[in-house]
Length: 405
Image 1 (cartoon, rainbow, N blue to C red):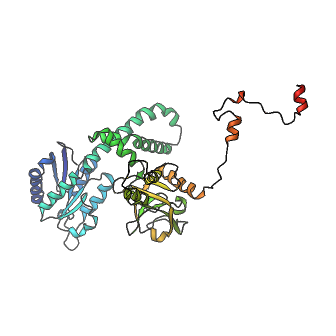
Image 2 (cartoon, rainbow, N blue to C red):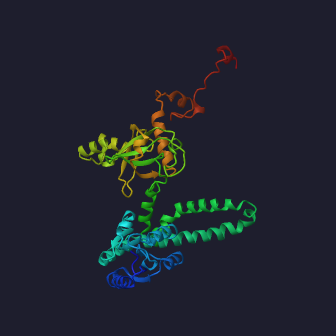
Image 3 (cartoon, one colour):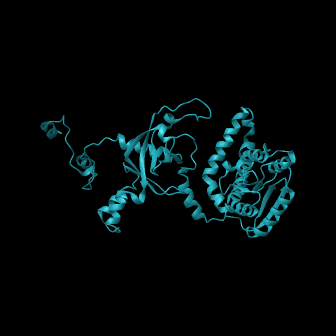
């Protein structure tokens, strides 16, 4: 995905001037179909860092070793990697490492957004740069940044400024959380539509995806397993975490000492909807349009008050899934930690899913009570108004008393 006709700004950070110039010429010739390319070559790593802090670039080509600093072959100066670490924290953009020391950064490769190519294969570098620009990240970065900046400015202008006389007396540290939570709420409600419009998508298409996307946090917010996580086991099976988040909260091994309370994780089985037994039976029956018991049974899975099943709609690499609360397993947390966290259900979908499971296991069956006599006494049975029906004698009134009255 590219922004047709847009100017893409590419920064080449390379201490060898001849290589930088050759790559610059190749990009201008071979990537002209993407739009206008504004290519800036910088031979000094420190200056490159200053440029990245103050100017927007869509992609950076980085060398690893800065020869101008006298780094030896045995102990190369890995300033390129250090520069990547710094810019990734302040202004993240796709990066192509074009270097003679590829082994020093191969562990960073995440194509097409982070790629590593040998310096003696500039054709491969051109291909990698094309893939980085066509990934759509540069376009998304521009529009998301503009969208967030616009709303922050508007919020400060329309909400903070008029209420500053009330806010200035409070602890200044409390203003930041207000801004963050308000911004997050606005983005959740409006950003998908606004961003989709900025990218040229139709409103129906954007909102159709947005309504489904609101169910999922992808990738998951927490690094540790938590409630309402959607997991994949080593056999590619799908599962939904039912254990409360408070029992699973833990610090990562990299720091902290809070350990999860739960030794086992309670998981509900989820299967691709196309593989669900009730769907399979409907298909085997010839997929009748209406009237069959197989079709009616399949439709029961979609009822909001169904005690056994819940549907998770398809989004990105998550297929349409059927969660079955009657297929629940407890698996050691130590084992589940190695499974793949695909997504976490967002609020209020997470709470609704966990509540549904609670209702499923805690429901109490009761006999059917006949209320016809009560409805009849109130005239709600359709046979006449209550006032027109023969009054019921007061149980304390005798027959003699009734005649005298």
